[in-house]
Image 1 (tube, chains in turn red, orange):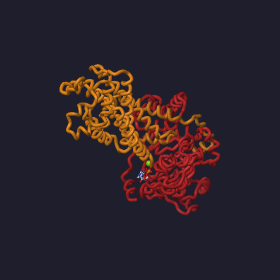
Image 2 (tube, rainbow over the protein chains, first blue to last red):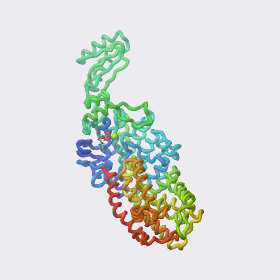
Image 3 (cartoon, rainbow over the protein chains, first blue to last red):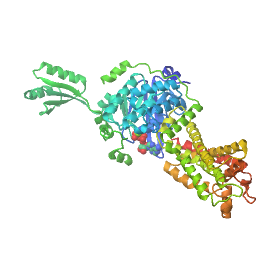
Amino acid sequence: MTLTSTAPSGRARSSGAAIEAEHLVKRFGDMTAVDDVSFTVPQGTVLGLLGPNGAGKTTTVRMMTTLSEPTSGTARVAGHDVVREPEAVRRSMGLTGQAATVDELLTGRENLRLMGSLYGLPKAAIRQLSDELLERFSLTDAGDKVIKDYSGGMRRRLDLAVSLIATPPVLFLDEPTTGLDPRSRVELWEVLRSLVRDGTTLLLTTQYLEEADQLADRIVVIDHGRIIAQGTPLELKDQSGKAAIVLTVSHADQLEAARALLASHVPEVHVDVAARQLTAPADGLSDMTRVATVFERSEIVLDDLGLQRPSLDDVFLSLTGHRAEPPAGATADTTSSPSPSTQSEESQS
Amino acid sequence: MTDSAVQQATRVAPAAPHDFQPPGFVRQVTTMVWRSLKHIKRQPEMLTDVTIQPVMFVLLFAFVFGGSIVIPGFIYREWLMPGIMAQTMAFSAFIVAIGLNMDLGKGIIDRFRSLPISRGSVLVGRSIYSIIHSSIGIFVMSVTGLAIGWRIHNGVGKALLAFGLLLLFGFAMIWVGILVGSSMRSPEAVNGLMFTTIFPITFLANTFAPTVGMASWLRTLAEWNPISALVQAMRELWGNGPAALPDAALPLHYPVLTTVLWSVAITAVVAPLAVRAFIRRTTD
Ligand SMILES: Nc1ncnc2c1ncn2[C@@H]1O[C@H](COP(=O)(O)OP(=O)(O)O)[C@@H](O)[C@H]1O
Ligand SMILES: [Mg+2]
């Protein structure tokens, strides 16, 4: 069967889900790395698998990409069972692993040719696709350079380009931006967005909340191998506490009047005199609209009025009891090593 | 958020995947070999083990020991050549082990395993490459040998048979290489193991000096060494050395047959172990 035949018809059969995990479990000895993980990724959407170092993200991805056999449970990629039809799965997906998976001694173009050949693409198609991919990842000038001379960011981009040579409908990316500087990260996000716009289904793992927030339609949060929360970024934020109305008064002498007015509509108001700012808990947009109307009818002049939601950082803290790792912005070009704090938590478990 | 709303709206059918068939085994293997040949282009120093090193051995042995080792009726330089060629071919094990081990230690093996190809293509590709690698060495040595007076005396048929035996033996050694490369944790460990085993084994034979001078237990060991049979066969086929002495161990009296038997036996025993080690190493 060719890849083409697994396209639209194959997906229709599997009820529109490009990726399905059902009760995936992986044990190494008596250590359970992945513990009963289930989720579904509809075709053409992005799932963010979010969790700290050692949470079981890589192990989950390895099971879904046929590299590792599940201890129990199943997974399907483009409608194919990863255990029973690994060949069909391999034809339908691309993978960029956590560790660099390009050949150090080949040039960028040669790496693309290597993988293109191993996918069985015709030579002419490989040449054309390589040019397109190098262009897309801003590597045209580096195409004939040996990978050894690439920076970390270039390597990562080439790694991703190589995964795309056969235009797989499903793409797995394990921590695609780890070790990238902030600018390369944002550039890569752009490329990923354009892939999804073209219909690719994406599963990406990340330790960065911001990344999941930016890219994912749905987020699955895992810790110690278990799913601890899932939903859209918005739902997750709602889970971890209330939104707040924040308003900034233009003139300091109206601050007290503003406080009194707000207090007559909401149960509790916090005042920040220096910032001329009032904060009040809110249930959502309707509360804010109500407050906006009240202030519009009053004499009080406002600089700003808005609804502030908790960040995913707050979500993570409230779910796991520890903060996620901050993006390693300053230390580009190296694969990030786990921070001492997360490591000690792992060893305790 | 608005961004993702826009994406939602503009989402279209998936990009039509390019129409292709997964590659046949031959294309998989030739691609793997192509990759290894590119590695040589980037690191020509990888070839020193089959070029500079054996040429140095030829010259050192021919000129340093050449005067003191006497082979009645033959010239030591000519007698030496089959020995050095057999040693170089034995090192195919080394080449395949290092190459395979380096691949297994890197993320690229995961990439290969995620492709619609046979895992065996990595093995066969590495094996064919190591034969090419060793053959470059045999060629370089033949030229060096010819330059210092080595000749083949018994015609084309026997000459080719000797080269054929050399390749057959190399094929058997590849399995040893696959076993070692799949079992060891690092290229350094492979290096250490091979250097302390294959290297002395290639000396504990009739490769560089006749076995007659050895203590009797050592001589027996040396004459049963598969390398001795191979070297003896090449010497006789090329007319570079005498037939085995009457008191030599049995294998040396039937060197061609023994070489074939040894090669088949090594393959039969080691190949299943090697494949198992490789599968275990690439499964989790
Ligand atoms: N091959 C393995 N053998 C034993 N333990 C492993 C293996 N691979 C992963 N683990 C363990 O499983 C847990 C999850 O690891 P991993 O999936 O790599 O997490 P993440 O990718 O989220 O950082 C870790 O505690 C890790 O040490
Ligand atoms: Mg990981």
